[in-house]
Length: 376
Image (tube, rainbow, N blue to C red; front, side, top):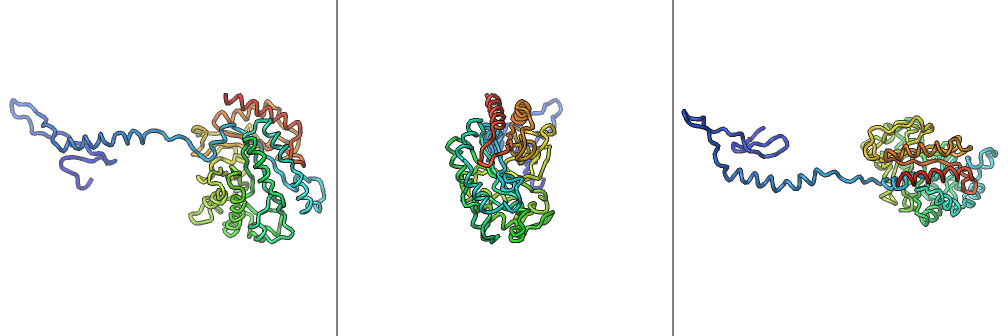
C-alpha cells in the first residue's frame, strides 16, 4: 500500500492499527521493553471506540419488507379467467360481439362473488382484464386511441373498479392479470399496437402497452394491490436492456397509480421457483402439475429477494372443468407452499354471473379453513 504512515498501518478495509513492536534489540544481560503508548495511539483507540456503535448497528439484519409481504398474511387467494371467448365457449364465433360482451360484464354479480370469497377466507382475488380475444373488462381511453376500433371491445362498465369496492368492504385485496403481448385473436389491435410475435425487441409495442397499463393503473390507484403479467417468454430480447423500454419501465407503468403494487412477470410453466428480474416483487409461479414444484435456495419465503408464489388451477384445466383434486390434495399442496413462507393462488372456474359453482365453493372453503389453521 502506498503512502504508508510510519506510525500506523491501514489494512485492506481501511482500519487503522499500530505497527508491530519493533523495539531495540535486547542488550547483553538486558530484556526487551515495550514503550508507553503515545498520544497518537490514544487517538486511534478513541476513533475506533467512536465508530464501534455504528459498526454494531450495521451488522444487524434488516427486516424483510417487500411490496408482496401482505401475501403471507393469509397465504392464499383465488383467480378467475373472465374472458369473452371462455365464458361463451361452444357458441359460434359471430356471437363474440361488443353487445354480448357488455351484457356479460354488466351481469357480473360483484357483491355475490365478494361474499363467496369472504366466506372461504381468501386473502386476495385476481381477475383477468382480458386476453387473446381483445375484449377487456374495463374502459381505457389510451387503448381506444391507439387501436382505433369502433365500437370499442372494452366494456362500458369498469368491472375492476366495482370489484375493488366490493372486496375492500370485506378486507380482500384485488389483483389483475394481463398478457404482456397484444391480443393474439385481434388482428386490428395487433397491427395498431405494433406487435410482432416471437423473440423480437418490440420496443414500439412495449411503449404503447406501457401507456395502456399506465392508464389503467392511474384509473384504479391503490385499489389494485398487484399485477400478474403473462407471456414474458423472451425476457432477454424484450426487457433486459439498459435503455427503455425494459423491465423497470414495465413495472413502473403498473405502479403508476399505486407505488406499492406488487408485480410479477410470467415466463411460462417453470417448476423450479425462480425470479425473472429484480423489478418484480413476487414470483409468477405458473404450474400445471403441483407434484413437480420445488422451491430451492429459499430464505424466509424469498428466492433471490422475491416473494415465493405459485399459481395453479383447481379445475380440469385453466378456467374450466370439474375439480381435479380432492380437498385433501389441494390442502396438502397449499400447506407445502405455505411451509416455505410462500403464497398460492388457485385459478377457479367461474360462471357467467361471476360466481363459483357449489363444488368449488366447498373446495375453496376447505382450503381456507386449512390455511387458517396453518397460521395458528
